Image (cartoon, rainbow, N blue to C red; front, top):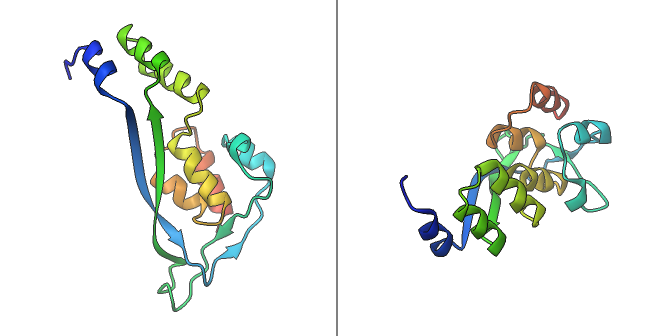
Length: 148
């Protein structure tokens, strides 16, 4: 965009990304077991997850019009621009380094927030993978098929 790094680092406090995913219908959702190996293969954020994972699938009823979903749910990624990130911006560090540093400082990625919400039974893994861009091979399609 042609903005000088010193202007960006001093003017920006945080950066947020958001997506809307379909919320599971509370009346008809059904629990589903997903093997830990499958979750690990897709990079599930176990370090941020509760001890009990409660994945569900969409079933469909009259209340939700047979879709299994009712309403929307926000999936978020918030990167606070810390002093360390400000220094990196001033040095014109590559974006992948900025992202790595932000994750090391505690930022939860958009995909991880969605997966954690799926583990809480608010939406499905299939919906998270549909909503959030995830480039990591064909595992997404295989996993989405397991959630049906």
